[in-house]
Length: 418
Ligand SMILES: CC(=O)N[C@H]1[C@@H](OP(=O)(O)OP(=O)(O)OC[C@H]2O[C@@H](n3ccc(=O)[nH]c3=O)[C@H](O)[C@@H]2O)O[C@H](CO)[C@@H](O)[C@@H]1O
Ligand SMILES: C=C(OP(=O)(O)O)C(=O)O
Image (cartoon, rainbow, N blue to C red; front, side, top):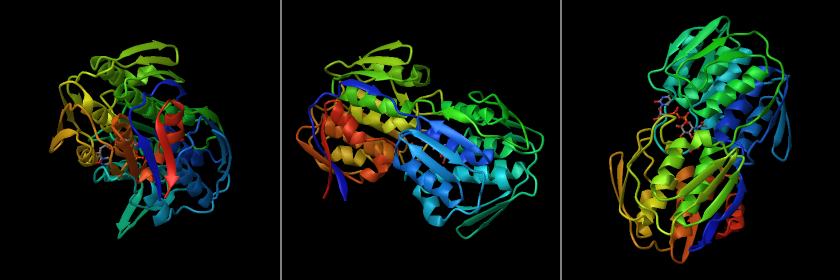
């Protein structure tokens, strides 16, 4: 079983090239199916979720050719419309195959997607949108069978701005007959990236990044080239690690306009932040101050994916910090592990109260989800003595070369197989 061994106390300092966004790369890889042609995607992060998505594409008949951070997907010949239970369970993003397959061949057979254990994560909004576009959906035992002899444009009103449901609806509507209007959409930058990729393949989509998206269906797409946007969550995680350890960072290929709520919180804790084109210059004080309450919410509010790294970072801050998690009902599980290190945290429903303590003690910890896992690594970097983190497969779903990157930035961390 692989684990990270960390000896705390070193600062996270240096320079880093931010990788492509996991949450943009995964739906866009699925969307290559809609093109029915060859697409070249660059700035693809080398993470295990991308490997899982490539396996699914291959099993459906797509040919993939990978070199470093570029993938060419040739989706001319599809041989299947069914995703196995095993592949569906590997990651949440397997659900994107639903919109892509329906749009391409009018049928898809899937099951409930797996992924991080951070809440119940139903897919009712995805299914609602696809039904509005004319899909017939039968849910039987573990299997979800979707069919549409013809998808037709529709007005779709989301009751909540779900990121994944917005993306699945965009994919299915891209090749539907007629116009689609999506209301109360999620506005995350990764949705804009999906729009840009599909438009590069000949789609007619406008409005991503706002609450309303307009799609003129077109029967045939062509191949296209696209560069994935930088990962704002990876960027925020390394900033939290530097802030937690009194470090200094220069991040290259960053998109600071996607990081507004994050940089504002870091400035409140006493960090200095400078931005020049695609670079972020960052310097943390010796001791952080507790910021005003962190409340997660749909973009542009504070991202739920950075709630845990920030909470971890605040365990040694001066004063009391408050965090409200409004997106996922089970995203404080990692705080139990932080408490074993000596953190003073109490959780009531979706509120966490953190009283800054003088030190954390190294411990043997277990990661149970991606961002919670990254936050345990941050705690290990801050702690006295040695921390061992198990369950690192969760972390490597979303961070490329996590331990090597942290080591190159000064951490005493090693990955072992014991
Ligand atoms: C691959 C990807 O992009 N993952 C991101 C995406 O996940 P994901 O697309 O799963 O997140 P959603 O925006 O859909 O989920 C937000 C909330 O809506 C609920 N919901 C969602 C869909 C649905 O059909 N019914 C329903 O009730 C969820 O349970 C959750 O409480 O956005 C989340 C919120 O920013 C991020 O944490 C994830 O990193
Ligand atoms: C929850 C996350 O991802 P996913 O939706 O892929 O499970 C995440 O990136 O923090």
